[in-house]
Amino acid sequence: MTYIPGKLFHKDGNKSGAEWVVLVYGSSCRKKRKAGLQAQNKLASFEEAVLPHLDAAYNLARWLTRDETDADDVVQEAVLRAFRYFGGFHQGMDGRPWLLGIVRNTCYTWMRQNRAQELLVPLDESNDLESRDLSPEALLLQSMDRQAVRQALEELPLEFREVVVLRELEGMSYKEIAGITDLPLGTVMSRLARARKRLQKSLTGHTRAEVQG
Amino acid sequence: MHGYLDGELDLNGSLEVERHMQECQSCARAYSNQRALRSAFKDSSLYYPAPAKLRKRIRSSLRQANKADATTRSLPWRWLTVGASMACALLIALVIWNAVRGRVTTSGDDLLAQEIVSDHVRSLMVNHLTDVASSDQHTVKPWFDGKLDFAPQVRDFSDQGYPLVGGRLEYLNNRTAAALVYQRQKHFINVLIWPSDDGADSEAKLSTRQGYNLIHWTRGGMTYWAVSDLNSSELQELTRLIQEQTPPRQQSR
Picture: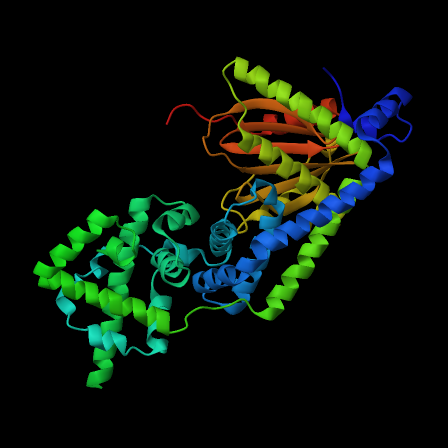
């Protein structure tokens, strides 16, 4: 079949074709109105499903990029991409993990283009000390000031930071995190455990220094 | 223990952890440390909500994107729907045909083709055809250096009637890609290039979408998509010219 749809764009298309259109689709103005309406509907349902999760999107981007302006740009681009791919979104799906997945991908692409060296930092295994021996620090931890916690999280390597942000700040389940980061469940769990150990280590070290100083 | 902390264990698992922690001092301590860490997170208001300015900016850019969407769709809308439904029917026929032959066309390829057509239309519509406008391959090729993690072959085919117009950076299929722009009389041709995933060479495949002709092939470890409103035989001619310039992938390693 050598049919070229482009031919149909000619204004003086043959009559039988036009009749066929009338038969199948009814009057053209109804169609045009419908097109406009569809676009409106798409925008409305997109805004309803996705925009409530803008805070979550921004929070994730802000923590991954560690920069206000960069987070702004990443979120804007991610939302536009989400809008383009909204066809793949099904009614009744949870918009938050869906959007966060796109935000994360956009972040990584952005990092690859602008801060490639950050992605190349190797995970230093020797840093994962057994934190059990550091106790009893629970009390010290509880009196932690927010600046110290913020700094400790900011200093975590990207792979660890993202699981902690998704788990502790977004309250995502392991399964949801695995979906967003495209990692196996086991990897999510081990990263989270290692990330927490690192946090604990840097926070207890911090308070100790403070107490002594 | 982290599973227990996060409430991801079933009842049996939780009971087991609780029992263990009654006996094991160090685990109990580790657990209370982690609980303290968690409450530190809860207290410290580490959450960054989206600034109102960004919210506004996103709303307006969404509106704009939607408007652009609607105008491209409603302009030749009746004809486009016929074309699209025909293309759909053709596609379904193709898929069934392929399935019968045991080779189902992946929907990934399909999405990609759609993305490429949109990209082509957008490049012509918003006056952003080229980032670097030059018919000199020695200007265009170095321009890509440092912007891409691969070096595409850039050749000018002015002598054969396909002058190089320039190059552009693109974002396709979740990665950056090079776009080379050629011209044939009044028609523009976008040739999109990025490294292929599987690496096997494949023959040029012609497809049609929304009236645009697309040719897709893989050669020398690169994936190529040529898209244009140019007729298919002239597009195939350009494809042949490009293919002659790129060496096929070497078999031995």
